Image 1 (cartoon, rainbow over the protein chains, first blue to last red):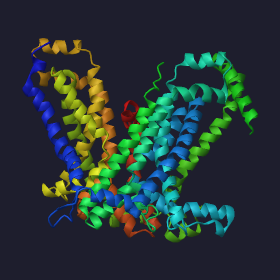
Image 2 (image 1 turned 135 degrees about the vertical axis):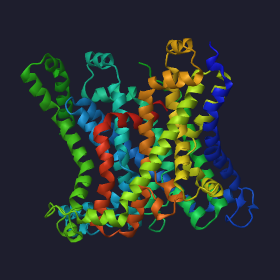
Image 3 (image 1 turned 60 degrees about the vertical axis):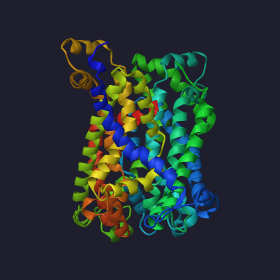
Image 4 (image 1 turned 60 degrees about the horizontal axis):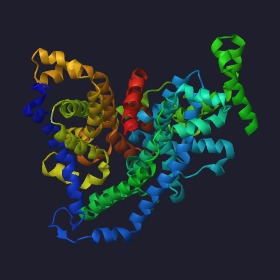
Length: 293
Length: 303
């Protein structure tokens, strides 16, 4: 070992600036949000300590519970619709030999577009009068088929979920595809010798071997759907009649519109805790699922 | 197609692989036709995904009336009036410049800080301390930023950075640090010690080793994290919407969202504005797609 790499001053110069920034804009707000959660505060008058009242209130707040339910709906839809679609398309791309690169690039295009732009794009697509989707429906089934996608409370959430799927599925397809193409040839060849072919190969060989990446996708979906914000805020901002309210849009309304900073922080803490618990449980469950080639 | 038939096609396809690789023309032709269902599925999916963008492009040359009446027709003529209107009323030029400035500044700051830190943590000799610092920084990967909006907003107000682009640069940088340090740390750890030794012989200090030897080797990883940070910052919406209130300081996503609120029924202008904001991204994507895909997926594979 040499002296150069043991210089504490260089070490400090390399590490301290990062830690300062990290402490100021990350660690401090995290700690403070736990503290704010214990107060009633409008941002102007003095804070009033109210213990865990904000958290008790959360459990009885119909809007918060509705928002949490919408986050879970978001999650369920993404798990049940998006993930099988991801798997299907990834397997299909892995099975073709020609134009694999083209398919991969094409499905990834929506991923590079900003969520704000996607939200606006779908706002146009969903328009009742001239939007692409209603025009297509009219073409197929006549005027009666046109729907008020974003202004009907029972449809609005689904509309957002479709837009969200359009944007995100490509990212996961590429992850999944990389894992499938990473399976060593010897394994698939051996399976073929044993007479495993076609879709049974997919089910018996591919699926078990890419479980780690499916688990990553599951984890990213769970944490992503619990914190979803941009697309909901721009497309509906929780409306109509809070039918699309999610935890983060509700938190922003409570914090910045009603100026209940204490209660808003409590919602933030609740989001954090719920995410921790869910991803923690998932990780515990998958501990034994390592795959080695 | 029923299940058995499909399995049969698959069986044929796999059985034919050796024939195809030996290069016989009839074998190749048969192979291609057996892959047809896959190609059909993929084409259907690609068209479904990309058609909305094509439709929007066509709409951007139409008038509002044309969009409603001639939804499926090509535009009557190549009319850039919508683009002119969108460019002028939506201030897209200003927003794009703000976005570019914030994004680049935050990316360079992130790369500077995280590469130095990753170097110190992975290659300098303070093992116990480094382990703890590293674990501490990685905590940032777990906490969703959405949980801290309110205290962060208060903090940015208290240190008088509210309504400045600097606030965005510092916050974007901070929230990119954990994943960037994670990727660079893994890369730098895999560099063999021998490569440093020549530098040490020449009497280089730690900073010299970092700048002259380690950093040049790390360039591929730096490109990856740069792209990851760039796309994230360029598309970021919520911090920008919270911290910046002046019209002239808005970034592209917030500017677009505001334009959307004001022109919700003017689809002609809206389409043009969306196309203007997508084109630079797609142009860059065309040239750097492999790097962009690798960069954006780098964080999740190892995580």
